[in-house]
Each structure stands twice: as C-alpha cells, then as structure tokens.
Image (cartoon, rainbow, N blue to C red; front, top):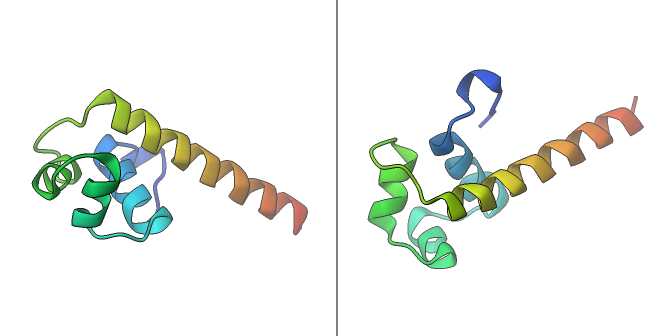
Length: 77
C-alpha cells in the first residue's frame, strides 16, 4: 500500500500502519490501540472519523517510516 499526497487521509494512514508496520488484522490492531474491530473497520472505510489520539499515533509512525525510507534511498544512491 502506497500513501502519497493524493490519498493522504486518516483512513489510508491507519490501514497502512496496521497492515504494513504492525502486520496485524483489524481485531489485533483494535486490541493494541484499545478499540474494537468494528470501529477500526469504520475508520478505515471512512465511515467514522478516528479519535485524534489514534490519528496522531499513526501519523507519527507513518512519518518515521517515510523519513527512514528516504534516508535509506539517499545512502544507497
């Protein structure tokens, strides 16, 4: 899953962090973040807006992943 400026939405970021960073299904991710699987599904489908705390946590992970990948690309040129 690739996230770029065109699809930078909370639902994309949460799904990316869940699948690519934690490699968890919705149920396990919900347990990790203190939520329910049904709410994670609603966040990822854009039905309900996620709480700001969850979005900030996922954004921080997303930023860290992108910075690390850019550093890796620069060092391997």
